[in-house]
Length: 250
Length: 250
DNA sequence: TCATAAAGTATCAAAAACGATCAAAAACAT
DNA sequence: ATGTTTTTGATCGTTTTTGATACTTTATGA
Image (cartoon, rainbow over all chains, first blue to last red):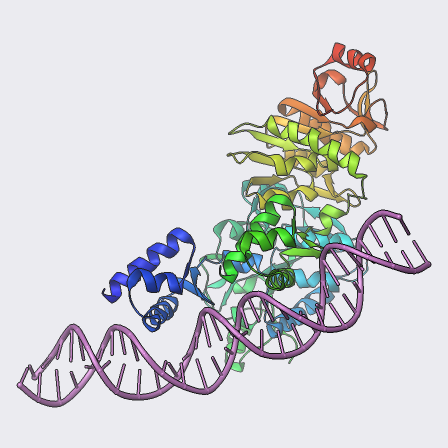
């Protein structure tokens, strides 16, 4: 049996059964265990499957990250610092918009115990906000599974009823030329509108997002203050030419 | 059976049954008790389930717990029966409104696996709805702490964008003369509007609500079909003169 | 309350799976 | 045909997973 034959067979099985055991494959192909292992290793490298102890399973897209709240603790610490600074910008009486997302979520615990009003499209934020007894408005609209963000036409209409003093946005990509980007066009629309409704905007993005470009652009660099945690001097000057930048932590 | 297979199996069971016993899992997977325990420990660490003595249950956010202040299991069983009947009224292609509240919340697990769209003002419902992969719209507006219902002017405006085939409402008071009532006037407004936007309305109310009167009236008896679980014959005829009544269970 | 049974934790050795390595076999090129 | 490259299968030491055991904690009812 040829290598490519085995590959198709494996992919076919994984696709159909969601998971395959190495021993199954050994019997089915007649090849040795070593060979099967090599096959799986290669298929994993090519991003077709995910190896697990004893076999391999279907590689689910980015669906996994949303439901699996596993963060490298370093990245989490960085996000917290960014979030803490962002939260410190909130003043008594402010009405703020907090974008859906994990970085902005970290803000909530640091929000000052003052009279503020929060509007959000992130359902994951609600629990924390209510726990802190903050007056909270939620945007109406359809719920995007996985990210639990409220999006769609309804969200845009619903948001139009509000005006914000400050908006705190997340971003998947920050690029000196292409500006701020995010994968989902519908989420981009919501972000865009939130920013136009706000007197002032802060974009929270850890180092991993810098230089990246995602599919949908929702703002120019100049449209908001960037809050991040690490920045090469040359990149920094590139950004600073266009907008205000705040670098937190070490 | 591979680790990941067991994981999916466990999650599937928990998702469907709300709770699983370790012994069940031992029999179902053929793995040892130790292994199952380890699995549960890990799944708990990953925030997928909550371990309890003897098994594991679905992890629910505080949005859901908040409004569930420990009901007697009898009353819960009755609510479940009412909810189950209500859910059975939902048909393929329906667009339904589900009111905030504990009784209506029970409906979610019984909703048919068909193409339906749900609109709700109850944040406690969202988790369950998304778990069942139901297309869900949330009403925008201010969040009432304690009950986690979305209310206020924004809620009314936001809801106006939708029309429903069926609306399922909760009520704190059901009275043959004073109709359906609820304590909070703002919630009453939302209920009222939801009913006018729906072709058909069902009110879910267990025996404890019958004959009661709360502060704010949101509908006449005739405005919807009452679903309840116990009814004296004389009271029943009183209600039946005005509207349709469905009595479920014993 | 106390006794008892069921469930939980911690630990450890056996079993299974893994990765690395190497020589034999097959395919390939000249 | 001969030397070279690629693929394959076997082996071995290491790591991960597993199931059994002993001991502790929790639930329950007399």
